[in-house]
View 1 (tube, rainbow, N blue to C red):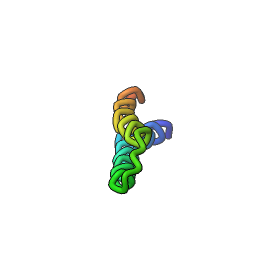
View 2: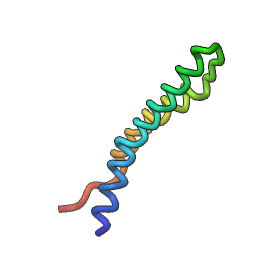
View 3: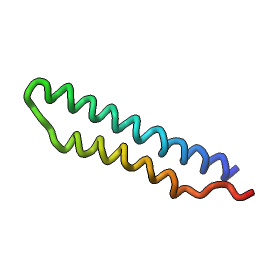
View 4: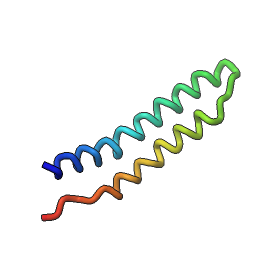
Length: 63
């Protein structure tokens, strides 16, 4: 049972965070077209995308 939980956590970190990062960056781009550039949104999006490497820290199932 714990193996399923770890696998789900690993997939959520690996695919969920970069997807959220793309959404945040896309939102920042749409807002910046109007002239209101929010640098923190671009930084947050980049941080979410970069955090997908944290999925490697979740241990794999021992065989």
